[in-house]
Image (cartoon, rainbow, N blue to C red; front, side, top):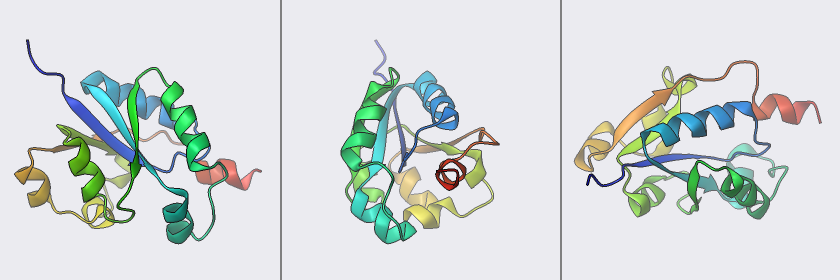
Length: 139
């Protein structure tokens, strides 16, 4: 029997929406999905404002998704290597909106770092027309 593949994705997921639902569903098609959730402290320091929902509230919502196997804290903040290594996924999944941006630098790793660990970076189609930023602006 083949071991189950592990898929890692991360983010703040403040105000979950249909784009998140689609991302999680696509991730779960590859294997067991582990979501790395940004802490409140990191969100505030990185974005300059606190999330609408607390870490515990966001975690509870993500855990309710049937295709999310586990939710962990992104304990490294801007340096995601610690959280990634704690999971040792086969795939690191992100939205295609990152395809034209420097995701490696954003997450503080290199392609060589991923290759050394046997982690494939997978881009899933971005859901246009919905975003946490847009939802937050309408509050």
